[in-house]
Image 1 (cartoon, rainbow, N blue to C red):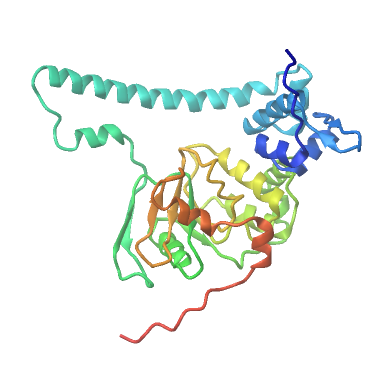
Image 2: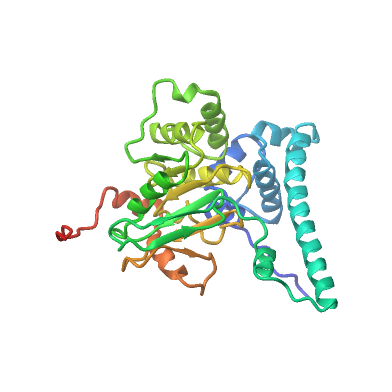
Length: 337
């Protein structure tokens, strides 16, 4: 019986499967890390072997290794892998510790039940959500009617989405005003002279470039804002402004590397690259501002969940976003009270 034909992928398909950009794949090829096959017409093609190699490279990049370090690891020199694995192990051990604490609480509740004692008020709720982080509450600004908005257990990465005119920018500004020590990074962001030479910015630029990003004033200004040490949380207006497809992909991967210990970051976005609904992790949340000016709501990143389709319709590719740059929704002036 003949075995099924091995499927080869083109660069766009391969990049999508690996979670990187096609530009990043070309960089890997230029560095000699990955050599795609070629079709009879000379087009790049990625089979099982190339995809396995690409997945290994992507995993090493996720651990925080530079392409030079990746090359050494792939050549058998694992010295640079030790600190990256140590950091990853520390993260996993912290999660294990938290799970262990939860298991002990469950064991205690079961023991109480065996003795005839039912769980007290709030015990089950605390069990299901044992460790709340930063929580805030405030009255929503116009165009809402002053409803109270609460955001509990704020995650390291938070996306704010909504159609044009939905009030998402006003929500973002109020978040920056309400969270103690937070800052707002608006659309007028510019980098000061020499910002690209600041150690934190230069390091981030180098990492992003290795993952396919295009260096630009917009990227430097954004990274300079992200690198500021003072704010306890940062709210960024249209984080994708001025960034191409590959740069957005590299940026999101870079932000996810911060892990659960990063300070809260709120990002307004209309880009399906910045907010890839299939890639949202447990340390991320989505805040939707509905078109009808109902209060903002948290949306789970799963098809069929309330608000999921509304979020999806707010997102577009970088190419579409570039065509609609600066487009604003018309709205009538607010009537006098």
